[in-house]
Image (tube, rainbow, N blue to C red; front, side, top):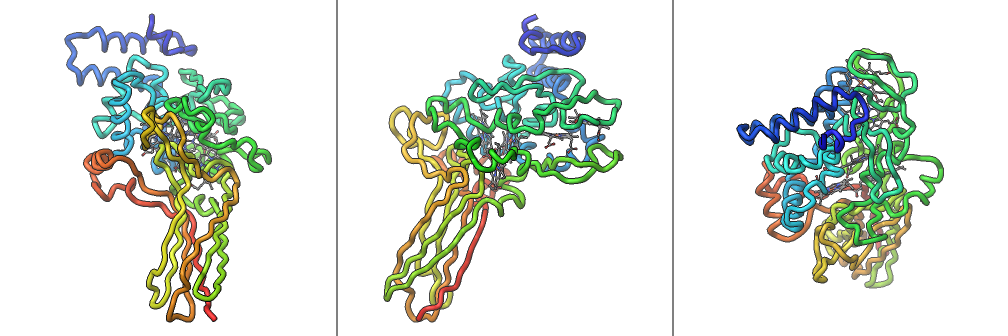
Length: 414
Ligand code: HEC
Ligand code: HEC
Ligand code: HEC
Ligand code: HEC
Ligand code: HEC
């Protein structure tokens, strides 16, 4: 029973056999059409990792929050589709499961089914979940000794969660695990990417978050990214402390807590200078730099007479990678070297100065400073591919910057 062993099912034995049979049928049934085969395999997957839709019936609040989060679309975006294809072309079809290790982690339980996952993504409208409810709530343990850390799933009818005093229900058993209140659960996908293993220390996406003041004060990823609120954990149950499942990050109000921008100006005759102090309040790297094109940009604009822009400049926080041939690459799976690293380190303060000619014919000028996530970047063919893949074309959200924080000051002139 190769399948059953690979599935590492320690729960109900009968359950395992059922899954194994379904998988064997899908392979063995040479008379089955490809579509039918795929449907059968998909059905087998969903016996162990039920679709999030199944949880909606009783966990409507959580489901609706999760549905708006990037996690619910972890294998659906045109950018993911285009970059998966770049990866597959680069790897020559080897290690097809690699990207799914985090984007649809149940692939680890079905390595033989990697092509099914690829086909689901390439269809443009995957019917399987990427990071759905079960993909987190069936994790029993996270092994932090390997890099990236490895999750251990326990398939069965028991769902793991944060409550000791859970209410019984007819759909599943519950078990509390400390893991669900700990960063370890998240580090498993957020600490480093296996595809960039040859980058060594530079593959620490969070930049030594453990030594940040925040981590030392006992905060976990959940404190900020799954903030506590009061609500129904399951439909009709008493209100209690619950965790927000919208996973605020690039989306949501958390952004406003990312950094403080202080602006100082000095004018000496026809020369002016603006000093911007960027204080990152984020306890890990900003950006976390996966995918490799992730960048945060500081823009400074000076507006003089009639609010006309007289000067503009920027600083870019991110990494520049080189591939094995020494050429710059936008893909971390091709990267062998870091050429430049300007990522904001955990809780770092960075001072930037900008010099420009004092605006003329005006009694004051405006300084506008903003920090934002840059849009996707990369080779033209890759960007065209994203545009072609997206139902929104050039309007795809990936092409839009996302504002983080802004400051504006008016500077009177003598
Ligand atoms: C199974 C892998 C996996 C686990 C476990 C996981 N994440 Fe993620 N997370 C992802 C992936 C993949 C994305 C990107 C989804 C996308 O945008 O396509 C993501 C996105 C996010 C985002 C949005 C980032 C942004 O740019 O807006 C936040 C916030 C986040 N995760 C927080 C967490 C926290 C907190 C935990 C632990 C409770 C956690 N994640 C556990 C895989 C995971
Ligand atoms: C170790 C876990 C892990 C692996 C492996 C991984 N990713 Fe990701 N990926 C993430 C996380 C976490 C995020 C969200 C990061 C953030 O917002 O800072 C993400 C975000 C992304 C995004 C941006 C979000 C989106 O959907 O547009 C793309 C594209 C992406 N990954 C592509 C890939 C590709 C292609 C591979 C395989 C070569 C891959 N990833 C492998 C964890 C992983
Ligand atoms: C028939 C209704 C029902 C369905 C379907 C259901 N649940 Fe639950 N679930 C509950 C109830 C009721 C609780 C108890 C809530 C409480 O104690 O406040 C619960 C608790 C939980 C908990 C907390 C366990 C703990 O000890 O911390 C998690 C996690 C959970 N469910 C996940 C899921 C997931 C994932 C699915 C889909 C695969 C799902 N549930 C489907 C009713 C359901
Ligand atoms: C990225 C991992 C992840 C995903 C995906 C995820 N959860 Fe959770 N969930 C957690 C963590 C971590 C906690 C505990 C947070 C805490 O207490 O700080 C939690 C708590 C819960 C709880 C108890 C608290 C509450 O908010 O009600 C329920 C019920 C639950 N999840 C159900 C679900 C369901 C249903 C889905 C899918 C719609 C889902 N979860 C998706 C990680 C996840
Ligand atoms: C003190 C609050 C805090 C804690 C704790 C925290 N973060 Fe963040 N995180 C932020 C802020 C603020 C941002 C930047 C603004 C934003 O994207 O919302 C951010 C951004 C992110 C992003 C998106 C960044 C990008 O480059 O796309 C991810 C992913 C993320 N955090 C994951 C984590 C993980 C994993 C942990 C635990 C190891 C964690 N965070 C702990 C506050 C926190």
